[in-house]
Length: 348
Image (cartoon, rainbow, N blue to C red):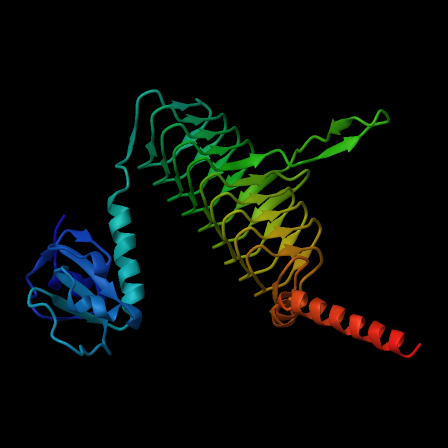
């Protein structure tokens, strides 16, 4: 589908500098632009590429003033915030790729399930008994929806994901391929023989509205009650969230984070990749945790921590400087010990 620069400017409340009727039908990075593509420039680091880009249209900030001649084939759209406007266009483009409503062959809907209007249900997908699927939901091929599951309107569940029984998925969530929502929590107790006996996990998982779950991530059901991911939380690929964990609203975590059972993560928390959280912890609001940190205790509101075990990032960096100098310090210490030993021997 083609759009003119004038049409795009109208969507973004921008102004056109150049040819308003020029049309684009693709999006591209500014350094990889080609005829018929739309790019954006927000970071001054990439300004050099606007003078050589092959893109037909480029979105720039109102404050942008070229320091060299622009390509004659390039039309600018000036907006208040180029980055957010381009993100808006990406969202529009993504919505255009959504599958049209239909139920494909071999998809199964249990007779007791309730299915809303305008849904897409891909081939070989399964909707279990007494489940409720809201309007405008997209369930891609090979997705399994267990019994008594609720899926809110506008949610997208990508191929191969699994939602176990009794779980609740809010509105406008995105669950990516291979994700597992509601598998059993890791609950075992040793018996008198020293053998592990499984503890039934009878709770569920609740994803509130606008939650994203990355590919191959797993969120375990609660032993009792609910594992809860609050509204707006963003979970990257390959993340493991244990039973009875609660993740606060608008918190985000990068790939390979692991959160052990019953820990509580506050609101607006940012967690870097490969961070591990022990169980039964409380992480305060607006906390930032650097990648590969190990969290073994509670963390107060507004803290910035790193390391394993993690502590204040500024203190960690000071400590790390000392750690890097440790070989030199040991060498100097050995030299001092040798000198003292020699002086002692000389006095005998």
